[in-house]
Image (tube, rainbow, N blue to C red; front, side, top):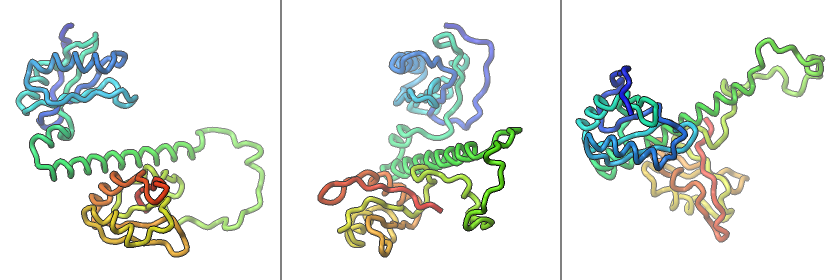
Length: 256
């Protein structure tokens, strides 16, 4: 192992979590975590170390120290240090880790932190899904029109009408809709009424009401005062089995 000559300072405000990137992606996760723990333990108590196998998370890790001073020392001393023949690039993490919030705050603060993190994750997924839809619908630049599609065609019913929804060209799948305070619940047992659903969804923060759809069985809308309650309810209830057959329900955010 050697120290590279290039060193850059952190761009994020100091906190107790160090973000490490440019790690060797071919190393097994267990071996990588063991090596990182050995290196960073020299600078303070490491209370958590997160490194994942997923494609987007490869080559990255988060090292959570017990205090900010240890994180500062680690960044100053380990910046550019070569691990498995690649120089590590270090910075402070953009947000506090779960382990830090859990150790420093109350249970309520930890639950709020998790809800905010989940909401931010779902917002990013929704944005990515919308961008992918736009790419699929965008015609290739300079592509010649196909003979079959360039012929005049009979106007279909409703031609010339414009959607009032500016995002209609890129339909985001239900699973990736951004968080809001209203949930759309599907696959409900037919014998569940407003009282039964209120007993289930009413235990989450800021519950307002359950609305059934006249003439439509198996679906309902559940409204909360703020996103936080809807996020908690969705996280807890999605996929839960209800009724005699324990049929899993589907819980998504209402399409805006």
